[in-house]
Image (cartoon, rainbow, N blue to C red; front, side):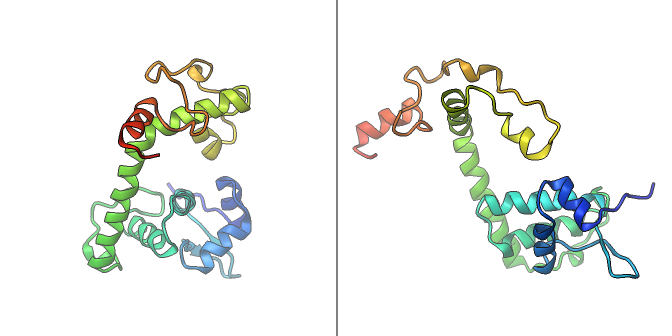
Length: 190
């Protein structure tokens, strides 16, 4: 099956970013076209949409342009234009030296570990903000970010207090869990 290719404008529309954003990432070498027509028009394969979303997410998570470039380069070296993992890739296919790969791995683990530590806290904070400031009318963040057709409803428990935190959110720091507040009080931090 022949993959469908996106023009710059189509890719931007699918990723819900501006055409200029796609062009900027292309100019920086972060996003490379999979084909270029005889007239010079850039065409992007199906996997480019995933890579563009990855770039946007990685930048939002604090990755530098160079780190984001390395992550996308690594994905492109190990996946085909449709996004299927290539089992035949070799180390020679990855144009990144070992030192930069190790630095990328350290950064990925740091961000992942921070997310793991904060996942429940972030969800609680999001529910609290949704309940207190929007009346529960916001769509879930993951659906809104990647699916424009996602239903616009809040999480089922957005209107209920979180049973795991009987104190509820701290008004001065609504994302801070009750247990963490107690720990801060005992240690004199905060």
